[in-house]
View (tube, rainbow, N blue to C red):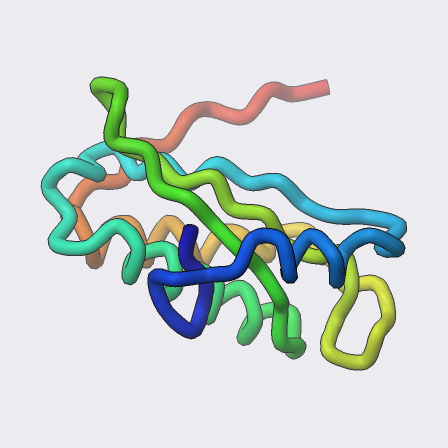
Length: 117
């Protein structure tokens, strides 16, 4: 387990802080060429720092990385409260900068066509 502060995150303490939260967000971070990244944990920290900048609030989170499949990935759990105790407001397009982060890390970014209603 890891978080913003290091690789020894206390999952029980995090769970205790979350027990009364109304919401939480589960995100799977799976860069296309994760195996080629220098440090998947630091990549995840960079991703969350960008999310915090986009949202204008600090986020409390914990994560675990998995290397037991053909596609290394991270399970990221973000508390559903902002740094003021309110609910974070996610706006459309918030995750677009993450594509730029992926290109910086791996040089690759394939986009999928969006479905039209």
